[in-house]
Length: 466
Image (cartoon, rainbow, N blue to C red; front, side, top):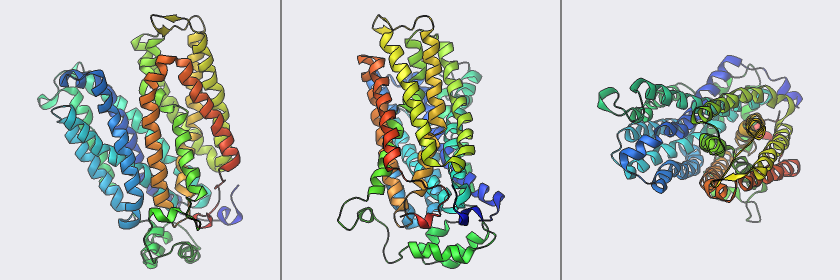
C-alpha cells in the first residue's frame, strides 16, 4: 500500500504519462525488433541457402547482442545520461533496419541483427530506469508497466506488418517495392518507429536523478517542477542525500563492505532468470510449430499465435490496473501460482499423449485442454511476471547503483532467454512433457523465491530504497 507521503503526492498526470510513453517507445522497438524476423525466416533461409543450424543462429544471435547492449547501457546511462542512450539505441535500430533489409548473405545479416540486438538490450534497460525516475511513487507501477505493454504491442505490430507486407506482395519471397523481396521490407519497416523514437526522445527532459548526480540540481528542480505541484525542493534534497557525486557508478559499487555482491543485485538477477525460465518465449517463438506438431493445421496454428499475442496485450492492461493497488509481490505470487497450474497441466497432457512418428498426438479433448492451458499460462504471466519484473528492476535498486545493477540484471535476462530458446528443441526431442515439466518446476520455485526474498516496493520513493 502507498505510504501517506506518496498518497498525498500531487502531480501533473498528463505530463508524467507523456514522459513515460515516450520512454516506453524503446519497449515497442524491443518487441518489434525481436519479433519482426518471424515472417522473414523461411524466405530468407531460401534466399541465402542456409541450413537449419545457420538459420537458427541468425535468429537467436540477436539475443546474445541484447545481453551486451543491456550490460553496456546501464553503465553508459550513468556517464552520458538516459536521453543520450535512448537516442543511441534509436540510431542502432535505424542502422539495423536498413542493413538487415539489404543484407547479401547470412553473415552480414547476423552482424546487422546484432547491431539491432545491442539497441534492444539498451532499450530494455533505459526505459524502466527512466520511467521509475520520473514517476511519482503512487503511480510508478502503472507507468512502469507501460514498458511491458509497449513490448507486447510491438510484437503484435511486427507480426501484423509482416502479414500486411507479405499479403501485398502475394508472398514473403515475392518482389515488392523498388524490386526488393517482401521479406526485406519487413526489416526496413522498423525505420518508422526507430526514427520516431529518436526524435521524440529529444523532446523529453533528462532524469532529475541523473542531473543531481552530475551536480546540476537547478536543472533537476526545473524538471521536477514540471511534474510535481509541490514538494520539489524537498525531493531534490532527498535525491541529493542518496546520490554521491565524488565518483562515477561502476560494477564495483554492486559489492558490499565485505566485497560480496549485494543481495539486492542477486535478487534482481534471479527475477530476470525466473522470468525467462518459465518458458514464456517458447510460446512466442515456437507456438505455431508446436501446435502443428501436435495435430493443428498451419492456419489454425497461426490463428492461435495471433490470439496469444492479443491476449498478452489485454492482460498487460489488467496488470497496469492492479500493480499499484495490490503491490508487486502479491501480483508475482498470483502469477507464479497460476503458471504452476497451467504449465503443470500442459506437462501432464503431453505426458499422456500417444507418440506417432516421433511426435505426441493430442486426441479428443486433450488438444482443447492444452490450448486453454497454454493461453492460461500467457494470462498469468502477462498480468504478473511480464510487467512486474520490469517495474521491480526499475525501482528496487538505490539511486547509486540503479542503472548499473539494472544493466546486469537485464543482461542476465537476455542470457536466460537465449538459453531457454535454444534448449527447447533439444528438450522437446526428449518429450514436450519434459520441457513443460522443467518450466513448471521453475514456476514453483519462483513462487517461493518471491515469498521469501523479493521486497515490496509499492508506494516507496526511490530515495527510500536501501
